[in-house]
Length: 310
Length: 275
Image (cartoon, rainbow over all chains, first blue to last red; front, side, top):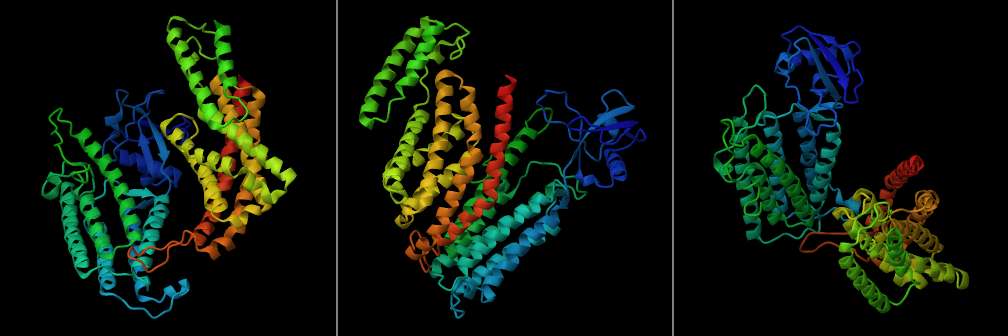
């Protein structure tokens, strides 16, 4: 069959179109485009069906597993596909690895190396126990995140735009340095022993709960990497849609209770707002997907992310 | 009917174009005017404008809508600022400009903060992304530099700053005021609104940057707004380094804003040519 490839402005991306056999899949189409254009590898291509002009609906994205025939609405020999270049792509594990590497390296730098002399302080300093525990806690957290990235998470998309690398790394690395500077400061004022124990204890419990949440989420998806969405259940997911974000937020709260810095609390507020945005989108998507019609289960009433607020 | 409409709008606009009167008197007059308009609005239920009327386009309620007094008040405030600035410049020299304009300037620039709210709730069409840096830099200079560090007030850049700001704002707010009162603005006014920035943005931005730069020694010396360690919340703030960071924002920020205004200019002036 003949595939005409156009850009969103209507211009033909590949002159003369592409010729594929009738049982070709979308993945075959992606390969063919890549062969012809060299630059656009499959994960960079966004292929959709054309939308009638003036229509406000979202275009149908072609699933790489399906056959092209499934998208031909009648004319079996011809199909027009809209192409969009998503820009250079980076795999999610790579993105996450570099994001988390920054805090993992920067924080110990402030703890172990005499960096404060460059800010005008004397090299000799007293290290409080809470600062040492904070170091272990922080490094454990980011180490756990890297391990989860490679061994636990099953991503809904394979790649992410390259620009996200710079944006996300800036966020994690800047905040990492900002918090590390204050917690390891020579003039750091520790909190009471009890408060420290409560903070770290609570935080540790939440980190373990968070890990378990990730295991549950992983088991919702099949290992062949097809993504997709299911209704999460079990453990905290019975009450909260995004229990993984909830435990993450509480875990940071534990860290802040134990270390008590404005920098840490600012990070908590920003991280909470970002995760709340994601949680609202996920909750909405799940409710829309599982509307109870046509045999699909209905999404149960649940808190979005932070009972009893949201 | 068209004549009535037009007379209403004209009288409404002129009503707000008093030379700057002391506030209580203005409030009284404004309340009286508002009551009068309300009376007319009630009566106009039975009176329809001709659809050709450029102000209300056949919609009776639009005729009785008062223009946003906010924009017209600000227009008059900035006229006062400009007048006082030029007067003191001529009579006493650039060192005394700040003292002469201080009160209306603080009021006018602080009131501009409401513009962000207006943008958020949709009362004005300007996007928040362009008003936020503008209003932010104004508030920072007005309160964070000029009001906080008196030593910088005698600098000559204060005069250029105040004059650039006030001329820009006069053109901008009277343009909005005209559009709201009459439904349109004359083409020379449109041209002025979208061309004055070509000169006034560079002068204004250079004055802002210059003033922050020359205020740096005073900021460092005074330790104002700075928090030092150790403290219970393990927090520190150095206003001096914040000021340097603020200067840093101007490096990408000014060309971005200027380019945005150039694009706006192209769009607005070509659109008016087409009509």
